[in-house]
Image (cartoon, rainbow, N blue to C red):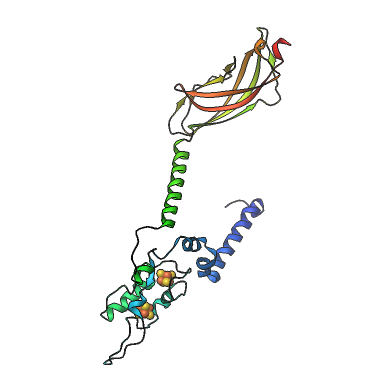
Length: 280
Ligand code: SF4
Ligand code: SF4
């Protein structure tokens, strides 16, 4: 950074704002970003149901919770109410209260509880990856209407995306009439218009090409004849569209210019051709 700040005031103010926002996020807002601002958690909750596998507390095994007393026979569950799972939770929730939107699935509570279970010589996974119906002892279904509907929507989106990728044209172009020009009448009975054309080669290989006027008795004459578009490059072209004046039927004619490569039309562009009709 060698220029004075006054020359980049917009960028400087943006950096200051970003710095303040990120300072605020890390110093004050913290987990509220995960629980309230970030849309990811909210989106997840829409997609979930009883069959969704998530981080959950097996309350059938853990309850009733309580501290263990040495040498005393107690009819309590495996949860010793050590509160470690709450202490390690970055969003400060108690997973034993059931699935909550604030859970960011970091698995810290699983590790903390497994360590406790290990010390108590009890099976791990009091907190683990379970579905609600699995914990309740229900039947684990393989699919449901919502899952099938989402799968169909996803398949449709993938199909549209695939179609967009594979039908993407190799060449893109912008065709404009040359500024300030209308038409030129020539002694040989022809009339011409001047155009500028920008062609972009979106592929990684060179593309040989030619310009053709579609459907009219018109010919294209490039000012600087070029026959190849370099890979990933943009070419600025200027060309004349020439027509016998006798075949001009209206002052303004819609024409299509096609970019042809290896006998295939790779791009078609529309423009207008202006000339006095039929020699008038
Ligand atoms: S997975 Fe992470 S965010 Fe969720 S309850 Fe456990 S510790 Fe908290
Ligand atoms: S870490 Fe395990 S044993 Fe301790 S309170 Fe949480 S669920 Fe209960």
